[in-house]
Image (tube, rainbow, N blue to C red; front, side):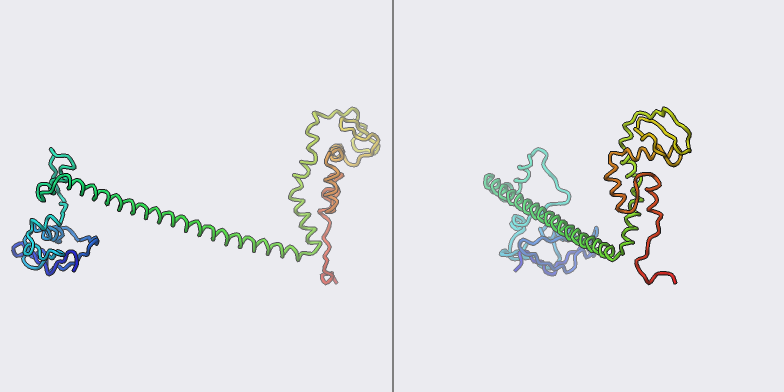
Length: 295
């Protein structure tokens, strides 16, 4: 038998049938929620369970006690069935504990010490239930975070695999290029970085405060000479105008000249002057495939 069992409960207010053949079984430890719109009979049903409303027909059975109102008086039944009213009243002149103990002491005629002991036990049980609920919530939260980290790690692993496959495909494509195509790519890369290379190569010139030209014998003729703080070689027949002579002298004066020149020579460029830097870039690329030769 269930802890509380309701069979064919009927409640009328005159000709109005508030409750019609209600049947319900509640087991020990079970939590039951009664839902419904206002006026559907929820409060009436609860008041019937506590004997506050007289029923027309049906039975309300309590485990090990029998039918309420017949086998057991409602006064004794209410000592085993508690009810919290929607609109409750407290005695303002009593403390909280005295309001709580009013029923056990006045109605149940229980000893105060025994009632307070039972209240402490009930409070400890309530705290235990609350702690277990909080612990369960914490475990769920921790499990959720752990699952999220696992999913993130799996997603990152998949991304690494995709990136690795992409890099491998690019490398395999680069391996099938011809020697001339590779040289062209190197030249294009050099062209993109040429401004940075030139800027770094002439950085020592930034330490020069100024240039003094002591004597210039003509600007474009052969045999002209110039003396400057750059230690320009006297008697050298410079080609081009004065601006070209200055830049060529600066490039020859670079502190990184050997390293940069070797780098440029490997890709077919001459770093001795400006013309040499751009000469290799305009040379046509030879096709390594003999089948592509013109007839």
